[in-house]
Every structure is written in structure tokens, then in C-alpha cells.
Image 1 (cartoon, rainbow, N blue to C red):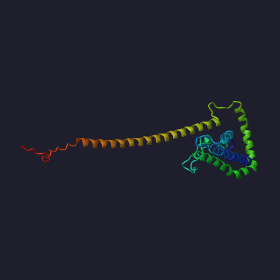
Image 2 (cartoon, rainbow, N blue to C red):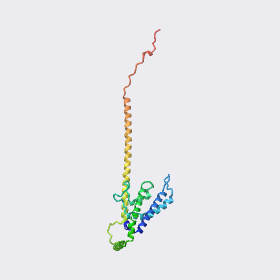
Image 3 (spheres, rainbow, N blue to C red):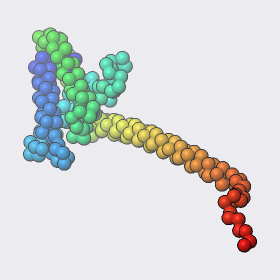
Image 4 (spheres, one colour):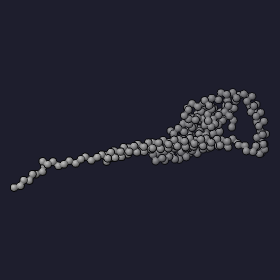
Length: 243
């Protein structure tokens, strides 16, 4: 796909319109996929219709976002929020695995909004390219020089063994990103498990300390010597006198 900085004004506006339309359908999906107290989708038919529409648009939108310059990670120094790795195009594939308010939804909206901003900011240069005859001359020269090569490649000539096409490369990048997310999730769960184990061990140590104190008290009570028995008071006995 042609990069964003090499488009005419018509293509620029068409891509921006597609991104805005996709954003509206993402909002519709989150609204219609809301769940009740029993974790059941409230508007099932509406959610399925929105999901079907998003699935049809997603491959095209992924290409448009990549053409806007957003790959796996944002360029250094351009991330506005250090807590979220903005600019990752593959996050759009997580629309149906996220819910409104869990943080991933905002990252999805951020990526779409940033791509819209790229095409909107490139409107004036696109207008200049549209009326510049040198732009069309360059496009024609590129077609003339690349056309035969593409034709031969379509026939199977000139392909290097083991070459990876763009679609496969995107899938591999998405898989690598998923693996990184899984590793982060495993680290987070392992850290939570370690914290739970530490609290459990602290509780056991406290209970053992209390038990030791009680056993020590019982031992001191049992080892205390008995008090000497006192002789009965003689004044309490009756004196028997002979008659």
C-alpha cells in the first residue's frame, strides 16, 4: 500500500473517511456487546452485526494504519503516555477480546485517532501533490520501471527462495507481539502468586509464633512447684473429755 506521504488528496480523504467509519463501528461494538449481571451480551444480534462489519473492514484498516507509519511500536520519543505502548497496529486485532473500560479499548481508540491525525495533517501536502505534474511523472516512471519486474514476479521469475511477503511478515510480527504479551501476563501472574505465597508464609509464621508462646506458657504453668499443704487447724477439732 502507498505510504501516507505519497498520496493525492482524494486517496488521503478516502483513507481518513475509512478510519472514521471504522472508529464509529468500534464504538457501536462496545455499546452493543455490553453484558448484564449474568455475563450475557445484552444486544446479541446488534453485537454480531457490528462484529461482522468490523471483520470485513479490519484487513483494510490494518493496511491503512501501517501505511500511516504505525507498526509494532511507536518511534522513540513519540509516546505521550509511558504506561501504554502506543502506536501498535496489531492492537486492532484485540477488539473482540477486550471490554469497555479495561484499558485495551482506549489503546485501540488511540491508535485509530493517531492514524486519522496523520492523514489529516497530510491534507495540505496531498493537495499540492494532486496539482503537481511532477508527482504524476514520478508515479509514471515508477510504474514503468517496476511494472515489468512485478509482471515477472507474478509469473514466478525472480523470486528468491525463502523470501517472506509482506502479509506473512505482518502475521509473524503479530504473533511475536502476542508472545510478548503472553510473557508479560505470565510474569504478572507469577508476581501475584509470589505475593500471595509471601503473605501466606507470613500468616503461618505469625500463627507459629503465637502457638509457641502458648506452649511456653503451658510449660511454665506445669513446671511451677506445688504449694505445701497446710496442716489443719487444731482449734477446729472438738475436745473429748472423759466423764
